[in-house]
Image 1: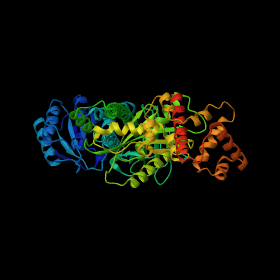
Image 2: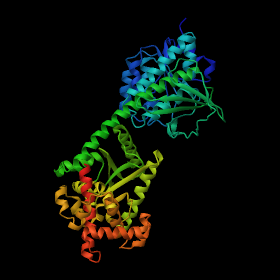
Image 3: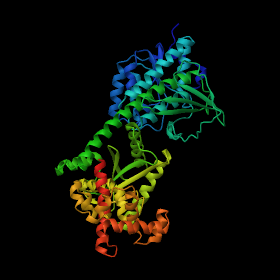
Length: 554
């Protein structure tokens, strides 16, 4: 026997329903049912369906756009329209008037149901009349699949696609839903409702009663929580959490969950692909600017606009790198993984920065206030370094972050200057620590290098050697096992202003040993430690030898 709209209206399980218009279509046969939660679902309609809508799919479209959807619907011979009113829909009354006009013109019954009746309840009751239990599940699977696919392929909802998928699932199963990331932070929830969740060690495995590629878990509390662990296609693990607060979670809900997960996987794959393209595009733009490859003012303004930067703003470039204390990083994969971690930490910890990777370094372009004092800048830079170092220490306590800092520049046209300075300061940060006699320093401003900036910019070891006094060259040419100890002793002795006691303490040697080494150095080199000019020349020479060592390692 045929199941008609008139018989549907007499179903007691659905409570009081109101026939708004379209009485002439009450004898129409219902051949199926589907939900309109995305405008594109019209493409999936075959005819004879009972359409269910809260108009949420059309919440932000214009009246003209809604008329176009109605025109598409007129070409489909649907059996009836079930309406639930929502206050969140723009121009809702005007859109309902258009639905009434369509229903009267096409003899399609327009029926309003109470808001508390779920669409899933309506779908289940209709399908029970049309099919047996197994076919009902298959039909419901196809219905939910079509709706989630239409939502995924729609271009009208892209402001919050993950939230829209969760909202649709929420309407189907009528329970609070949230999506948590692998760090157990809430990524999104249906209706932006806050849901407290913590995965318990006592969570037990749950059988959804259907074939599934996902692991379902159940944990008890004030409300029973059902958790589905999802491994997304982009290498990320997430947890879909359903709180059994309003109605019982059942097998039909699991069918809806399965299709929601497929839609989420599609959306995260799309977001990942778009993100990679955007990152690559922005990386290329920034790389060209930093390396001075963009010289046209118009092109710079265009690039600044695409990057969301003020072409006339004030910026400073900081180059970050990471070393692993204890053992050298030999494997390329390890180094890449560490740089990826560093990039993420810099993005998370620093404000007002544009970030890109450059081989084994991370480059940050920071917006700055030109009116701040140098003391304030130094304090801010130290705080920034501390944040990045703390973030990297969470991965491994042996990581040590280094940072080279360029000067403040006016406009992105000058970024290449700041970048070159930052790269130079980073390259010579170990030497810079020697220059300032501060031991292990991990952040260095290029401006602090003073006269040594000129030496740092030389790349010819033969030319650099000319800045080393002959006396110090004799010590470096001393081919005896003690040569390295003598160089370290000389450097320490000069750092402590020729104080033998402090030199001995710093080197953990006896006072007489330190005195013997200094006497030995004097004999080999002929350095006059009472001559201030000669002492300065030797200090500079020690730094230059460090530069030469670095060049020889390249």
